[in-house]
Length: 608
Image (cartoon, rainbow, N blue to C red; front, side, top):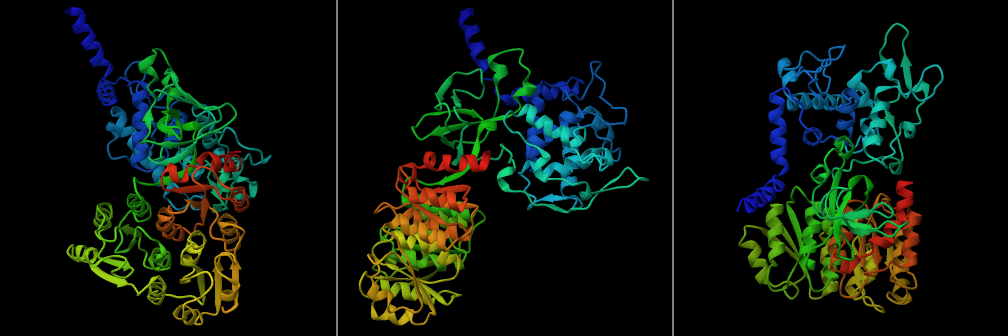
């Protein structure tokens, strides 16, 4: 019986959560005893995230100030430096609200130190990197410098020689990031500093900055590893191990092939290293980096250290096209939207024509069953707190039953629908608040070409009209005459030469197949080069691309087509030629499961 009780107790002890260890660590601070390193690691991380600061930066500052992360010395006295720096964060500002608390409370000391660092960053008097992205580690270079003091001894360069001042406080902090985050390899060389960037005064120790902004190529910068989210798609290190737990002391669940990286999907928020649970006597200062539980395309899951992960982007998907549309809406309209555009989820011409309208209304495009309001769509409309819904299509496309369901929720409903898809496209075009002098024409029954150009058309306020292969309807022909220019999406096999010759100042983007057409459009009608949206070109699976095209337009990003499990060479060449860096995969891995094709195309560009 005693043996059984001992076994039960052992199991219970193993199940004590980290919160209990944290509570015990905090109790120790009340007795002027330093908590374990893993508790301090958590306190520093949580304080950093509270102020939206990369934890790597806060931990590096803490190590630079106090190499052992200690608040108290061996006698239980508060650590106070020769210059009066108090405690773990070595705070010298004696005007802090509670000076005694700075000495006795680690949590207060850390929080006050992080607040000082944040105030330096937000001061508006320090140089910035690009758009001052808070999650980019290099953005904090000058705030870290100022935390220690905006003085000449912290000049990035040695004044007399122009060499890097490796003894500068912020340079030592970068070295600490690299020491405790293997593979990070962050360096100030990306700033390309010159002595003329600074003013050195002989009668003052103060360092003055002459250059307000440092433009740096994004691929040379380092983003924090603490902000990955569920469904983000990441690239592992080459030959990485996925482990059964967040520790190198656990067994390997999967080994990535040597010399190759693999795309994995994040399953949840980061977790802390728990090596101390598996092996005693470890220096947990070297285990301060986070881990993520991830899944690979083959369905295997495991934990991998965050320092080994490179951000590819994210997957926007759900069990069906309706949930995928809602997921896209959640990503693009996180804070809600006054208006929603609603299209039939079983056929696509109305949604295609509606892409420019949705973009101009800053409205997500959702899908519904023709005869009833799909539950996931209704839930997303509620989350958005929408006031108005625009229906695309006549009652033959979306029945009055759906319209009545929306009105019963207190929503204003507007419908743009004609006797057929051609007339509906005209009504949608005429409803555009802003119209350019160019019209887009695509095939009414072969949708990939229209998908390829939808984001570009929406971004530029060009209406999208549709046609049969060989003949325009009289109404469409008349409508097209109102525009000075016409862009035709697709080859003569989808929009004939007879039609082309009737158009005002026509220009065709059409290749031998849908992928070559997609490439011609992306290269010939370029949008931004920061990110792209990946959608399937497979027949009957266009719905995800339709709803994603509005988000692509919102983010000034092209939409690229692919097979479900392979990407044609012409699209791969487009990715490389455009220098695209990040990708949003629309739909599940059964629809756009090409992370392991696209990932290697950009890995060396981004991370070498």
